[in-house]
Length: 595
Image (cartoon, rainbow, N blue to C red):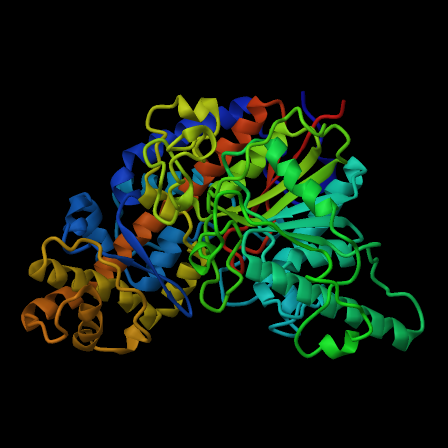
């Protein structure tokens, strides 16, 4: 049974005529292609944070990765300039490719196949646009203020997030209109930016679930500031606000969403939210005195904080919460913390009948790792969820049969729900079809690579940015670390500020002590110079691996579409956000059949 997703009629989509057979055939082609080039997608890539995301092939020299390429490829690739790498390899929209030499057919086929198999990352009316540093049109007048989002929703919100909450919020509203459903559940709501726009801006009744108690408190405070700003505007205009305002503030619930718990447990969390007294939250900070007339009643109104059964919340836990894309965007624009599988009390589906619970639309903006797959399963299994908009991120934190506890995921305590040591259902693959395909496995390295921003890297290549030097530096440092300590492999060094402005010797002096080695460790000068001359090769090899990133992401998302199709639900994938601005820009949209 299927349902037409007319609620998203205003959004460009390339999967509208994507039949079930076509989905399965594409999955077969993807797994075949990725299996053939697994040595590239599995190259160990380290993510550094400095201004924006940088990448480094840590094992380029220690594993002699360059010579794993066909010799015919090496001959043409090592002569490419950085802009040529961007134009001839990574930019799928470039139609004016001018080759400095004759390329092997196998290399041309590799590039063409990678581009052909990956889902397009731009809407049709934006395709052909050259990747640049320009922000979306809504930021042309003011680089930090969206002209399409009301000013009360821009406070505390960075431009990237403004772009995302406006576009996703409008899509959620369309789904609500089509399903005649006014209730929304926002999972991994963070500081509540999307929640506020849905509630105060679009008039929806919203319950927001966030694992980090600190973020929930901030969300409540920001709600209060927005309410005061609306009241002040109305006083000035002596009329009602031009924006539709819901009858009550959003409900904020500080709880973990357990990926192993059944949908009944999820509804129980929402029922707890419904017991919270309604009313404007008491803000803190500069605007608190503006609301001194409001009577404070315990915690801020609209906030429900309930510790998980059998666990104690602490600062150590907060870093592994199931919040959405990092709210501390100054340090990380593209990633988020992962879900913490803290167990809740067992739920008896038969007690406290759930039949009377109202229907709602489920949404999650950059739900990390298994949180996004958990929401899809709740959508399929829970009769109260009418529709879903799912924006995923942090694919490397998805659980798989081969790696049930990937780095960043806290291992569940022994004796938890069901006394299982690993999840009974994994984040990938979700569908029976993909699970049955030979070579469907995706390593941690491949999934991590799928999180990288292709458009941002194209821009850096065309600018011939000095930041690219960091690639070579980290790979070089790895050789000297292993010379001194063969047992140290892929040691974490973290960000070295302004590394691209330092000579390698100074970079090494700062990096070596971070792995317990002396800063004055002798370095062979001739060897250093020889490796520095190979910087171009390092960048080329990384670009080859990066070319596979959208292909891996396509397989992960296609698997979810096929899973929904197997459950009798049609879905569509929308490149909703500008990929030059928001790298994880796909939204999976689905509505359940009526009746």
